[in-house]
Length: 235
Image (tube, rainbow, N blue to C red; front, side, top):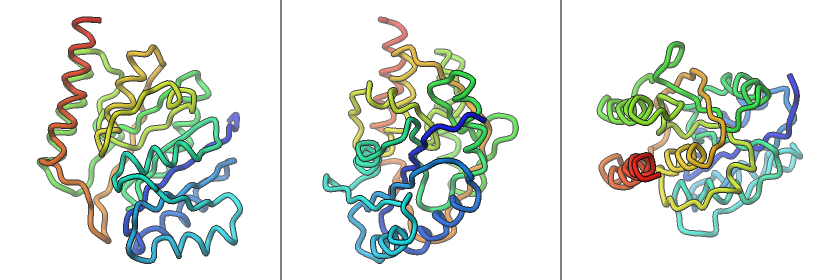
């Protein structure tokens, strides 16, 4: 496997119950050249202190603060801005992402792809736990865009996607929340970047509280869903 510098970005808002486990799991599973950027997203618990202590022991772990407004998209953008790797990938701070998928993602990058999407809705993937309604809407968005527009992933809404840094640098990011996970691959696709997917297994968080509020975010997801359709029709 060809090694490239990888920046793993972990947005963390009040994840003191999970953040050490996430970092330890990454260190255990990966024998790659990577940096781990934990973005403290206005936490009021011990998240920052725990990461700061670890960063003193491990030179590839960095803590940065999201100095902009609180929120997933701003935290991810802060991580992108501070990343040094040729590849970047957001990883959720609640242990929901299957980090064993990372090596297969890198293999696809080495095959010439620019974006590799972790997909819960293809053979070998799964969405375990969580709201069935959220699962329905995310699956519907992915499958409908795949069959209607040919977007090459069945799971457009999953944040667990690996990007060449040049893809991120080319996109004017508009998102303020979790819809950034849909905006980035859609804009990359219409910009001509090469996209594929690999199966991954998602687990509902066991500790802490999620800041994802589906019905508050539906209009934001719908904005990019309709943008993609309009882009296909009007070119």
